[in-house]
Length: 174
Image (cartoon, rainbow, N blue to C red; front, side, top):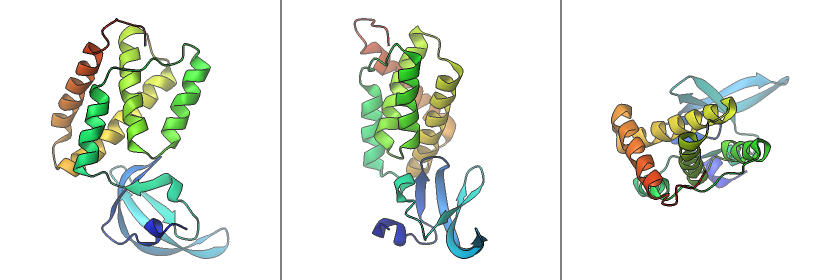
C-alpha cells in the first residue's frame, strides 16, 4: 500500500478515477464480504463512496491538483488537437484507457481532442458521454482548486478549447 494512501486524513481532497473529486470525511468500519474492514468515507459532489484501507486502491486515486497543475492543464487544452483514430473501436479503446486513468493531463488532452473531433465529425454516444464526464470532472476539480463558480470556469474552458481549434491550422480532420 502506498504511503500516500495511508497518509489520508479527515478533510483531504482527492480525485478518484470513477467518482471524481471527493473529500475524506472519516474512517469507518464496515462488514464487507463477511469481514470487518476499515474504509475512508469519501463525500463527492454526487454522493458518498468508501475507499478501503486494506486494498491498494491507490491506482484509482490522487491528491487534488495544485493551481500550477491546473494552469498546465489549460496550456495543454490550448494546444492544437491531436488526431484520434478513424476506427471507432480503436478510438473507443483510447478513450476507455483515459477514463480509467486518474491522471489529470491525459484527461484534458482527451477533452481537447474529442471536442475538436466533435466540431468536424459527429461523436457516437459513448464518445459524447466520455467527453461530458471528463469535462465535468475537470471543471469540478478546477472549481475547487481556484474557488470559482463552475459557470465562469465552463466559459474559460470553452475559450481554451476555441484557441485549440484555431491552432488546428490545416483544418485537418480530427
